[in-house]
Image (tube, rainbow, N blue to C red):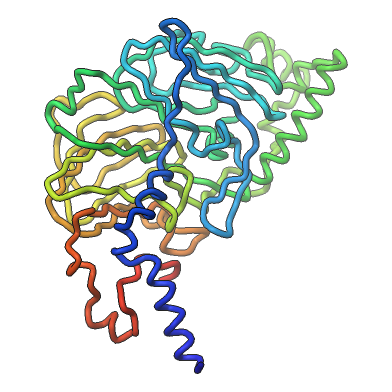
Amino acid sequence: MKRREFVQASAMVAAAAFFPSRLLGKASKEANAHRFPAPMEPRMDGDVKEFRLFIDIHQQEIVPAFRIHTLAFNNQVPGPEIRVQRGDKVRVLFENRTELNHTIHWHGLHVPWRMDGVPYVTQMPVMPGQTFVYEFTAEPYGTHFYHCHWGTLLHMQAGMYGSFIIEDPDDPIRKKFPYSREYTLVYSAHDVNFLREELNSMLERMKERMYLMKHGRFDKERFAVFDSKEEFVDAVEKGYLPPYVVNRRAPDELPQPNWFTVNGKSYPMTPNLYIKQDELIRVRLINAGTEEHYLHLHGHDFWIVADDGLPVPQPWQCNTIRLSPGKTADIIIEGKNRGIWTFHDHDTRRVTNNGLYPGGNLLALVYEDLPDEETELDMMAKKMGLNNLPLVALDE
């Protein structure tokens, strides 16, 4: 076989895996279902819904041939989706299986202050091998999330986040927009070099601290914890150097993300949003990362129906939404323009994998009832020797 024929044949084989007939096939849809946060079933203890979360170090494949070490709830990134009804009594048993300290903050939930998960403010950190029990009533209604609040800069981008959905039988959004299905998309950003260096450094520091504690040699200055601001100021006046003076971090200082994920994956492994003509779908957007995203949908306007879980009094339409760190937003997409449409971050720096476009926060809105004739190729593609339209490009 000549080189040109080999390249042409290889391109046709590669394209065959991704053209619309495959995208709309049963196997593709089943695989796609696993690209959304896995819901966690509670154990009932009387009238309390009990969930068990553990944290451990886990290898996460962001895209084929690229894996990173993460801190993952129940070995999943994002962590399991907790979904309850408004007013439910909730208990979360959180087990720390790592050699680091952790807490869980219930972002957007109105929990008792002792359950808020802020170390040295509402609780002591959950140390290696320990279990902490969080108990609260599920309020308010809407799209929320949970994340670690210890070493937050590292631990969140290392994977310690998950969605927390509080439903209401009298759903105010479904009343206005009778959607038939919904999707959860959790966005994040990762500096993988920072992750590797900081995770290793933090593990070494924790080994030292655990040794000192075990042998009764707890030192407030070494641990950088004080009983009061006055005690801290006094220590500085006596020559103590706080950790922010003697910087422990790498020369690059703060992280510069080079990978951007949706539900723990980067394009081309990001999930698709399936829809049908005239169908309404609800998409819950959660920014669990450090970067702003400007999410743009081609071929459609969507309705913004909730902001930080709160239903907006007057929904409005747009095709690009700004999602800042810590924000959640719910949108309704109406199936009014059949096809395969891109839904991506319009800050295209976030649509890269290690600096290469396309990648990152890029996914598709796919109409399941796309007519067969619309999956055919244009003449230019046929001149390239392709029988069907390839849907995956790794380098433009």
